[in-house]
Length: 228
Ligand SMILES: [Zn+2]
Image 1: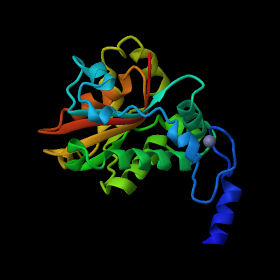
Image 2: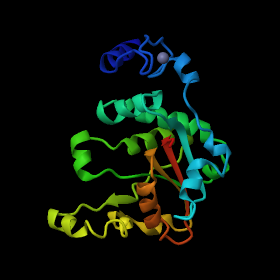
Image 3: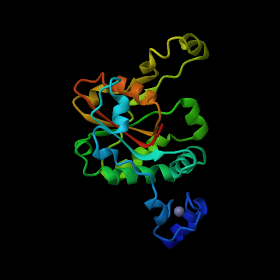
Image 4: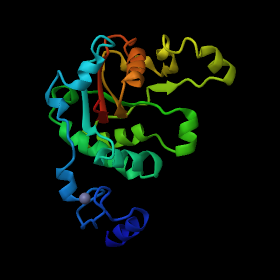
């Protein structure tokens, strides 16, 4: 185990993402001091939280939460930047697992059947090599023991189609996503997972597609919500 830890230390730097102090043995990614400073939203305790409210009148969802507030130059931005652009895949599973621990006793989560990651554009996936939402789902699964189902796919258009679609894309956002195996989700409770909630347009588009499934109940969870 010691040897493995040693090898992992070579792959992932052993300093805290936020304060850059050396991590001690039981610490991972963020030091204990910085964990205490994480801007936790506790949205899961308030059904009328800002994220749920942002979706009111747009699409019906039964649960909404974000783990952290996102502020410019704050700790959340540092974490997400490393996750998305510096190949720190471990941050995705780490944050997903922390969020999962927080949600363990939640009324909605307790009855959730599937975790569904928001899919990444094929072009972005090619560049990055991984979908951060998938990693967050892996972390959530670790804590919650709920299976991950890749129910959504992005539709990729050819250039001509994109040009043609430019005019109607605002009215037809939902058509950016398609549902795989919809029968699997019938009568089920699903949690849609993404890294960050800003305007909610992507989440809304995914929920539109998901809500076409008979008797489905939809919740949304992200690692961060940008405060406006
Ligand atoms: Zn720190």
